[in-house]
Image (tube, rainbow, N blue to C red; front, side, top):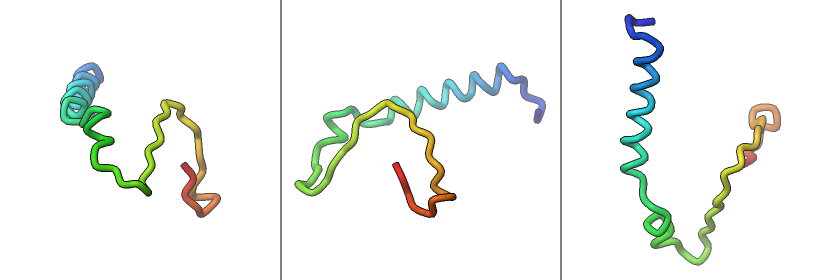
Length: 59
């Protein structure tokens, strides 16, 4: 598609993810400056949700 092979497209995706990950703050930086009423959820679990059907945001 668009004259780019699938392998090249995935290489671009991988390179982009690497660049974005390098810019992302570390855990200590991300937690610095949080207020008393702020909260953070650290979890690597992916849970399917259907926000459209429920018409409410579920996380």
